[in-house]
Image 1 (tube, one colour):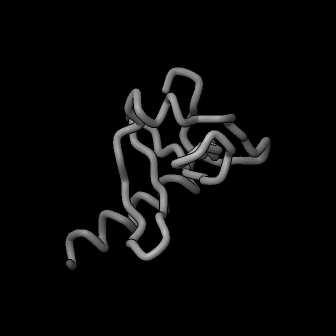
Image 2 (cartoon, one colour):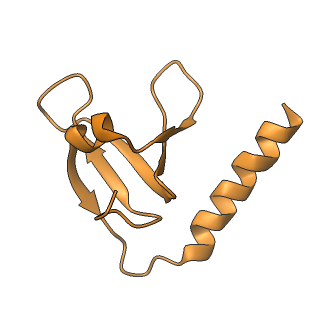
Length: 81
């Protein structure tokens, strides 16, 4: 997670050697991703995910407040669930 910054898109190899999955790095060692037929979820950006990471993409116009909004929405949803 040293290279990844909040808001970065992590392109990963999920179950194959070919890049086929994307996640958003949320900061604090967490990523947000969605697996088909499941709800989106946060997970630790662990060694397992670091090994799966093919590349990291960053939007030049990214603003930290965008990630804050996503995380606030997730927090509100988990409280009401």
